[in-house]
Image (cartoon, rainbow, N blue to C red):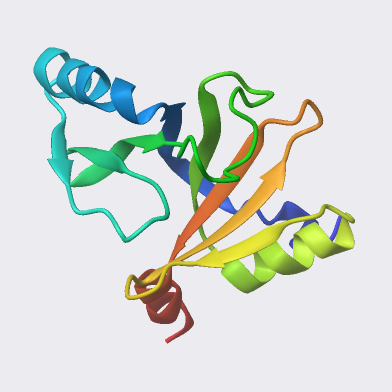
Length: 143
């Protein structure tokens, strides 16, 4: 076994995302803030309304409302209301290399004005997996 096959790009669960309608946003936000004590926080500009809800400075629940008038994918995704699961990643280039060597298709999604780079892939059952890389941490690890 080579060192690259021992590389594990995941270090922690980063967040999960719940798809909903815009009308469902207030009740979901209320539940996660009032019942679970999460706090709404910063969220990058996105094509649909929603909230990032934080615990201890970490956004752990994302609420994402699909737009009824936009082509924003299926109204009931194959994963139900769970849109995707995000893992905190490390080793962005090593992860790209590993995915390519395994012939695993992925899409890249840098976040404008945020030091975040995302890779999206799907598990064998179709669940969307996001790997979230923090570019400032990636740069520090290379230094």
